[in-house]
Amino acid sequence: MGNDLPLTVLVSQLVEKFAHNEKVVGSSPIEDTNLKTNFMKYRKKPVVIEAVKLEDLEIYTLVSIQKLFGLGKDIFEFKEDGLVIKTLEGNMKASIGDWIIKGVQGEFYPCKPDIFEKTYELVE
Image 1 (cartoon, rainbow, N blue to C red):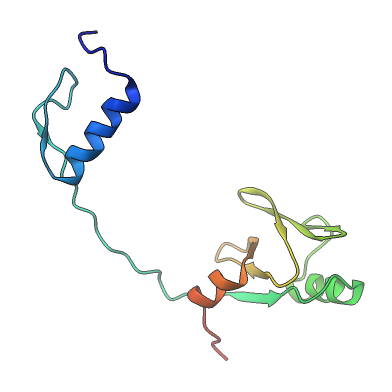
Image 2 (image 1 turned 135 degrees about the horizontal axis):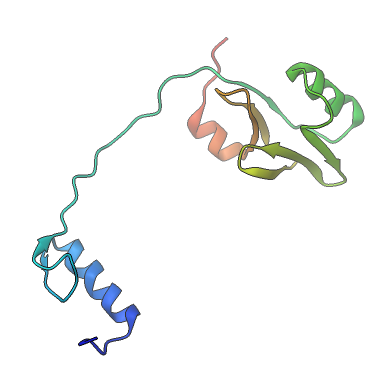
């Protein structure tokens, strides 16, 4: 429709113009619109969560995790190489060394150790 450039080239041009805060001119609804966006910075709210590190896959550890969080078998599925946790976003795998977190809505999900260390600190 008046432009024979491949979509990837058009997108690249838009990204380049956006990076330089140039006006984008073309046959689209954003014609003559400055693409400058006011991005804001946000900080996580300081919430206290409960978490436990999955140290091993021994039955004692797995049962202890279930008891700690007061869970039935419907949340965790035990596998040879880790735990499958039913989360709000679907099933997620927790491996040895990962943290299992109880979120603010009472949901559970795994977290890799490096992310956990960057995001959380011990409260007690």
